[in-house]
Image 1 (cartoon, rainbow, N blue to C red):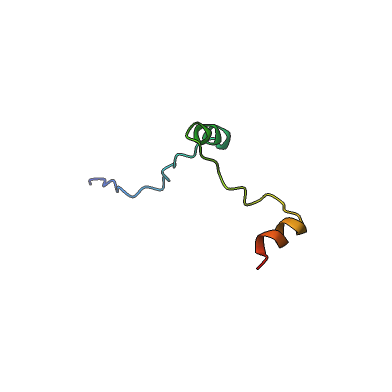
Image 2: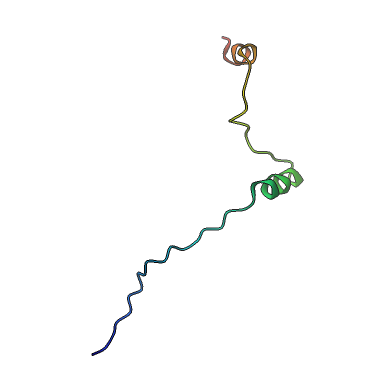
Length: 52
């Protein structure tokens, strides 16, 4: 009897995920920054942004 080894094992390949603080510092060297989407805004700021 021969044993076969399948290439599709149950192992998940780990994806590289950089440390967010290191990533922000690296971006700052390039003059870039991440969007502050989670930053809370005041009603006045929102009215100013969406005023027509």
